[in-house]
Amino acid sequence: MGADFYQDKEKCPTCGHEEEYESISITYNLSPMWYAMFPGDKTMLPIDGLTGQEAQEKLDEAIYKMVRDEEKLQCLNPSNGFGSFDGFLDSLRKMLHLSRKDPDLKWEVWR
Image 1: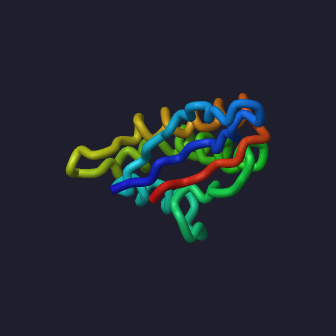
Image 2 (image 1 turned 120 degrees about the horizontal axis):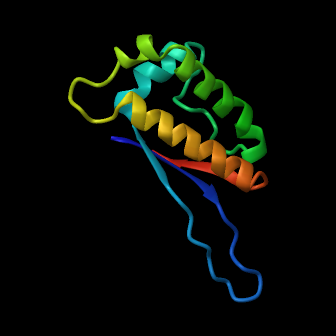
């Protein structure tokens, strides 16, 4: 199981068409990495409801900590092979890129 993170895009006011959004899926198998970096967080990657602008600080901090503590966090790779440090870091970088690209869009999470 995991969570899908996406930025909620509004429907076109003229035609009602919904833009497609990019979903980023992160497995809960990676939660030990998150909680090693942010032991006080109550949920993994708590950006649900934040705008891209608001989420940037948390994403920047997470990426910084992952790069800084790579050796320690690599030891937390799931033994079942579902999820990895490298994939998690790539997902966070993609989320940061999307947050910068569309800073006014809100992040939503499907669990």
